[in-house]
Image (tube, rainbow, N blue to C red; front, side):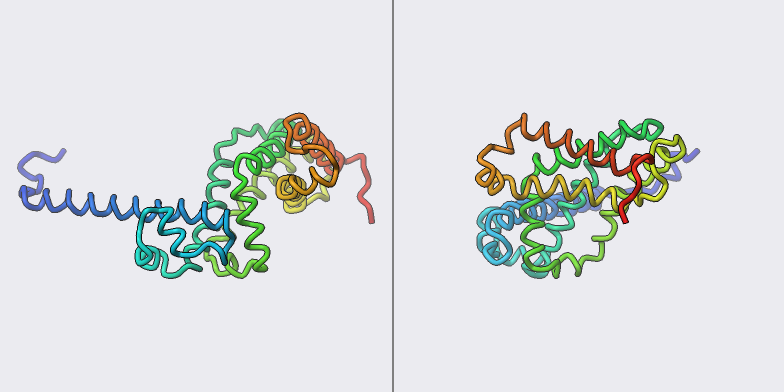
Length: 233
């Protein structure tokens, strides 16, 4: 037990100095976060080329120089934007409570999560579309990009192993392929919902249409992992 006599003494001046530093650090973090939020909105609306530093500064109620101070360049800011949207999806996914001992229900829950997340966060889809137009050259420079796919694939891997052990799933299906199937069906539907609605002559973003699509995706995924369906050569 530490007695009062042994505790280090702190002068009022030093304590005050620490509080000032804390306030400054908090203010700096707030400024940085404000710029990042503004950048997500501006890049999603105007793309990479149209998302100028000036527009982002105005949206953030900040100054151009602060973007260069915190992020180094417009490209550095865009890379962090991409990392941020991936991390946010991972964080949301981490909050899922999945019972892998019930692999069918868990896999269905993953499908619901992915499609619902894309619909709730259209900026995620828009920003990835923008980066794909640039052939992924910005995210390729990220040091953290690979971290964000691993958890999702690992979760699906756990579900598949449980399904195999219970005789429900085929053993020759990779978690990566199932992940890509779910992500692709959800992403395509969301990213092309406007043009598809015009092409098909129906509002595929309507709740009933989305529910029907979810059911179809779940059925497709279950058919893929079913051990009684032979893989195509």
